[in-house]
Image 1 (tube, rainbow, N blue to C red):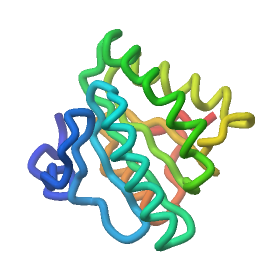
Image 2 (tube, rainbow, N blue to C red):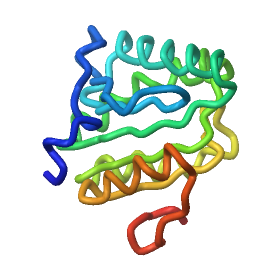
Image 3 (cartoon, rainbow, N blue to C red):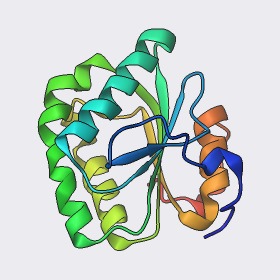
Image 4 (cartoon, helix red, strand yellow):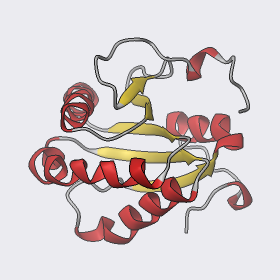
Length: 155
């Protein structure tokens, strides 16, 4: 894993959920998380944070690492469907970057992208980055600076 010692990618310890780690890069209108196995309680905590940031800033930008995912991890995120429908209209995601290292994380990203036009939780702009490009992904989430297309899957 690249950049493993960089402080912005370290867990803050500010969550009680086993589903996610809130990363040090979370500040102002940016929420940065590392997602594990999906749980109803984890989605409640994650969506509460998104609502809080939306209330403060109007729009929230999300950096979401999805590393070491398996088929089981992918399937566990079906827990997110009902919270999406119930809570999704309460927050507004501007830029969303998914950062992954498995076909399961990439599959979930592309499925979300496909239904984005009709789904209540749809970012204004979303991109997928390989784990080696996570610093580039965080920069894009924080600033909106465009990155070369060869390093993203944003089509």
